[in-house]
Image (cartoon, rainbow, N blue to C red; front, side, top):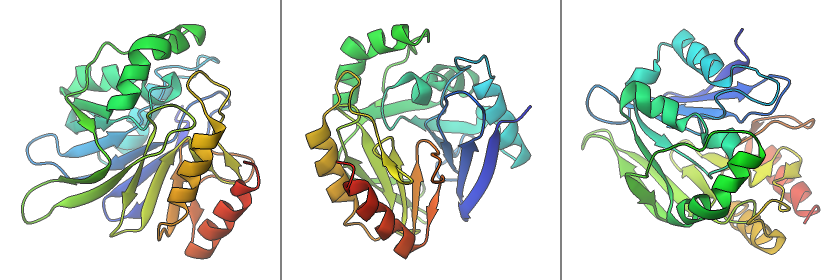
Length: 242
C-alpha cells in the first residue's frame, strides 16, 4: 500500500505528501540535478517504518517509482534536521544508491549527542552515516555548468538546533522542514528546541518571496501552501502562535 501522494510543483520538483495514519514526514525529490548516473536529490526520506508499523520507506520508494524514479538513482540526501521521522531512512537510501548525505554542522553536532538519544526514545535506529559535507547558510549551487540549480540554504533553528530551510528562488518554492506548517509551527519542547529561535527563524522565512511553502508535515489546516497571498496569510497566522 502506498501512503504517499505525489505532487509535482515545478518541472523537476516533486513532493511526496505523507498520508498514513502514523507519524512520518513529507519528502521532496529534485530530479535531474546532479551529473552522472545518480542525478536526483532526496530531501527528508523519513522513517523506515513508524510507530504503527506502516512501511514508510517502501511506500516512498513505490510512490517515486510511479513517477519514474528509483532509490538507486539518488545521488544526494539532504536532511532538514536530524529527527528520526525525517532521516531514519537516509541510511537505507545510501545503502541502495551510494548517495552522499548532508545536513548542517549544527545539526550534526546535536545528532551525535542528544539527537541519538532522541532516536532511542522513539524506538528508531540511528543512521550510521556521516555527512559528506555540511550545509552552510547561503547559496548551494548544484549540477552541470549549463543547467545549474541554485538552492538558498537558511539556518532556521528553533525546532532543533541546526534545522535548515531550503529556498528555490527561481521556482519560488520554500521547503521548511518542521519550522512552519499550514496553520501551525514546529514543536519546541523537544531537546534542543527554542521558541525564541523559532520565532526569529519564522520571521526570516516570512520575508522571502514564496509561491509555495512545502512543510515537513501536514496538519488539519492542510499541507502544501500554494499562492503568494495564502503563503503570506499563513505566516501572519502562525506568528500568532509564538
